[in-house]
Length: 111
Image 1 (tube, rainbow, N blue to C red):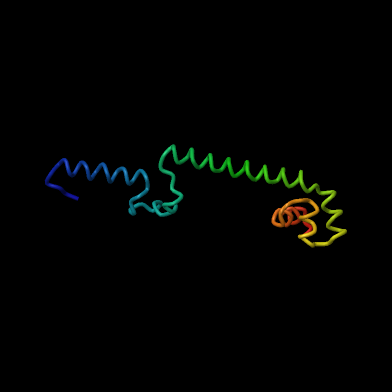
Image 2 (tube, helix red, strand yellow; image 1 turned 135 degrees about the horizontal axis):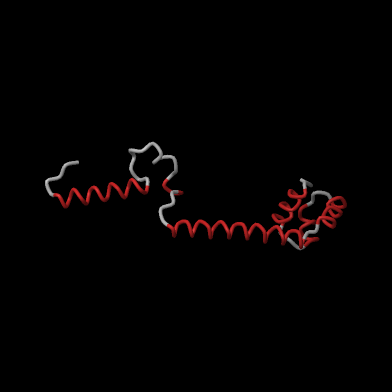
C-alpha cells in the first residue's frame, strides 16, 4: 500500500511483517489452520502450556493413586459382587464420593 510519508510506510511494513510472523494475516494458506485461541505466540505461552499440561498429568496420576489406595481392586471387586452396583452402599463402605466410586468401577471394568 503506497504512502506519501515514508515513516508511515515503514510502520505499516513492520506491522505487516509482525502479523505474518505470528500468523495473523489472512493471506497465507496456513494462517487459518489453527484457531486464535490455541495459537502460541511467545515463549511465555509455551511455558504456561507446559505447566498446565504437567499439572494435568500430576492431577491424573494423583487421582489414580488415591483411587487405588482408597479402593483396592481386590476388596472393591469382592464388595461389588456382594452388594451389586449399589453406588450408595459401596461409596459409604469405602468412605468415598459416589463419583469416585463410579470412576473406579468403570476403570476396573465392573460397569
